[in-house]
Amino acid sequence: MVGVYSKLDGFPSPEEQPEYYKNLSEIGNLNEQDHTTVLVVESSEKGIIGGVVYYNDMSMYGSGGTATQELSASGIRLLCVDPKCTGMGIGKALTNECIRLAKASGNQQVILHTTQAMEVAWSLYIKIGFKRSNDLDFSQKGFPVYGFRLMLKKVG
Image 1 (cartoon, helix red, strand yellow):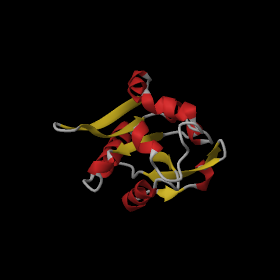
Image 2 (spheres, one colour):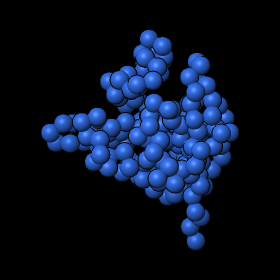
Image 3 (cartoon, helix red, strand yellow):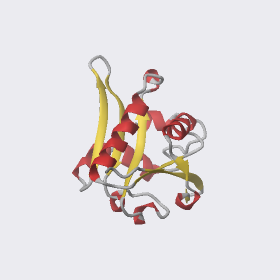
């Protein structure tokens, strides 16, 4: 993940956001947190080619802004796909699995954050049905981070 994020045009470098990159490098440890699941896609030839962190409880989400106060909500963070594997539907599959988990848990919404540097992901989220939510926006050390929300239909 560190390699992918550090090469995004317009995204802060490891020198500018060392704590963020430290978290990326230790992503596997998040599975030890309550209400948190790291999902990955593996290839027999290439190893891990995609991943995302799913939060079933926003209090564990760990972002800036107001997102951690949202009730009956799941969160998606740190979606990442190997650049050599883009266009294969990996990001969409990971995002849809997070939505499925949120529905199964009975949550009413899914929240995520992204940046201008993540244009491909931004476009994907819009196509899936996420809407911009200005109330979730925040600034991380002067770097704008944009909130998105997907309202889930109640089952039954």
